[in-house]
Image 1 (cartoon, one colour):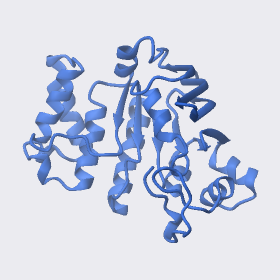
Image 2 (cartoon, one colour; image 1 turned 180 degrees about the vertical axis):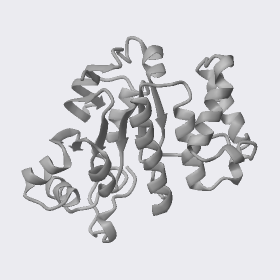
Image 3 (tube, one colour; image 1 turned 60 degrees about the horizontal axis):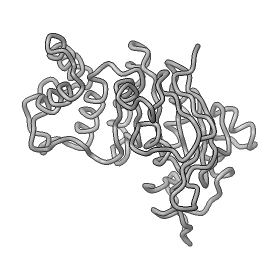
Length: 265
């Protein structure tokens, strides 16, 4: 199957510092791809370049056959995105948020209502469509953000830590929705997470970035074999080290314990 995302020798510098340094990877159409790394590794910068929010210093990107630097509008119509931080309008209802997104993406009026109804049913929010977002739980907001990101029938969905802060039951339901979309609509999934078990169970291919460079790629089993470890979490720690990074990527002098969950970038 063809690759829907192609990244070649991608670099992003701020002043003289390379935050992303000559990385290359590809994502197969219809695949589920996890992009992992500790704090300050370059994940968010890479995603911003892929989604037209940052211009690369050098290198090439192809998103569904479009160069996001040359043809950003076509690239944007090829993907949906769920940001790490909340991005819904809390003064609008769930339905109004989706209608606004549909207008921004020029979804035809004769199909918009049907598409909204389908997606609200998928994420189990049909009965809350007229409720204001400010009254939604964190999990409900995440589910609606996924529905919004899929409204214009994108070929790719980017999920930047979509389950951050959610309880295990909600996390499980959210990934069930994503798997169903991948299976039923063939949508390509590109996600980041700090829950290693999510990446191990869900992703078909994984790339690990650290200090702006991709240091390993493969399936979870490949990475475990390469590092001689028994789990993806152990492989990740062996590749990136045991010292926690803070928001800017510098080291802290203490370790987190439960699940070795990394903080936000």
